[in-house]
Amino acid sequence: MKKCIVQYWIQADQYSEPDYNALLKKSEEFDADEFADRSARSFETYANKYNHDFVRVTEKKLNYKHPTFERFDLWLDDSWWEKYDEIMYVDSDVFAMPDAPDIFAEYPDQNTLKVCEHPGFQKAESEAQIKHIYHGILKECLLEQVKRCGFQAGVFIVTKKARDIMKRYIAKYKELNDHDGHILLWSTIKSGVPITRMTRLFNYKNAHFGGKPPVHFFHAAGHKKSTQYHSINSFLDKNKV
Image (cartoon, rainbow, N blue to C red):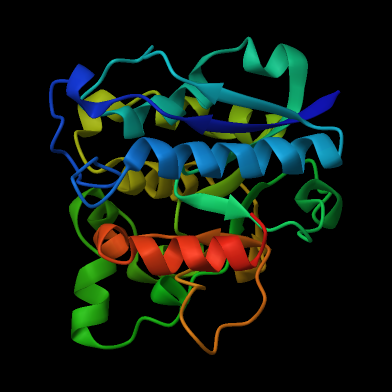
């Protein structure tokens, strides 16, 4: 069966809580559509290079709060898994570098949820760091579980086996009534799904700053991307993305 790379790009004003987060909103200084289109082109090129499918979802389906929740459909709709045995989700502010290796070939295990290393969880020690990662429904889990399993949800791979293990937990997303990232991590911990840790190079934040290593996927994460728009585009131009 084939592998698939999935992105979502649906305008937040179609949802009940359009200000749920402020990521990738268009302004006079920042063309969010152009930014997201550039991300999509990079992953379409990447998918074609390694003979994987690329799907960009532009119509709402779950229609809950905000478009960030739409990705839960990857667990809830069986039709995805009639065609694919692995699906990689990527945010629309992530960019595939031209020389990036095939992530599916790098991590071939068919039994795990695959997430990237994230020192913000794994190395959290101070009171402020702990407070940042440990609240909401995650308080139902042990702190050590949250630190060990935690990941940044801009890039991850769901295998069919992992999906089957996690599905009934993800299905509780409305009653859990928390941040979508918390729900995803809570479901990971509570389901006991096995985890594969992938290198940070497949989900590297702010690689346009000096001193960063060559990365596979550049994640322009955070609310400051609009103020760093020009430096990010210069970085992408330089890397021929």
